[in-house]
Image (cartoon, rainbow, N blue to C red; front, side, top):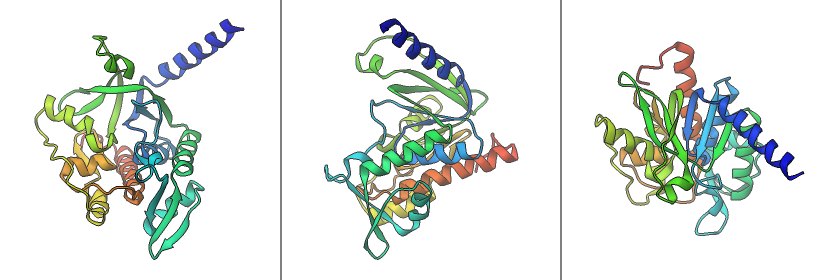
Amino acid sequence: MEKIITEGIIKSYMKDLLENLEVDVVIAGAGPSGLVCGYYLAKNGIKTIIFERHLKIGGGMPGGGMFFNNIIVQEEAIEILKEFKIGYKKFKENYYILDAIETISGLAYKTIRQKAKIFNLINVEDVVIRENKIDGVVINWTSAKIANLHVDPLAIISKYVVDATGHDCEICKIVEKKVGDIIVKGEKSMWAEKGEKEIIENTKQVYPGLIVCGMAANAFFGSPRMGAIFGGMVLSGKKAAEIIVNSIKKGECNEDN
């Protein structure tokens, strides 16, 4: 019995990995913006995988605000949450309360059901660059990084890479270091109203083949952090997907959006 269990896990996992060595889009980070982006990409027939370096998915959403696992979203994000069938209650005009655990679970469930594949415990440690365009990512086990082991990585090829790594804006920092054509300004101190507004404006292509969304977008452009309000994250994820879908349909993978 133990052999059957082990064989089933190894064979099925390797099958999933082999089937995703070349995809349309790689998303780094399975927080709310990364999941929403993955959902809308997969819904539009775009082959998408999401790499999450942590054991859990969800970024900062499951923790709510200071361990109070409720979150706030604005009116503008409600239609997206309805599509995911996530419950909410009106708090004040334009503001709604959501259960953080239900929300991230709902986002993940619907994203997976759309056939976007999520691999956790895998760290994106570098990017593949060809002719001044991002053409994929370089991955390794998170455990290898934690243990500081010198283990050579492997590569996944893609048309686009989405940096949804949150506050650290990790993929953009890699490109900044390797290429030097972009500058990551870093996030500013908390200002929820300003940060929520600017996150949508900041969601865009910042280098050929590289899109930023979620808190990574604000960190890239030097906008404020927002705390436990997540409407902007949801809207940013959808906008990132729309940018990529429109570009792929037009055959403009190498052009700015």
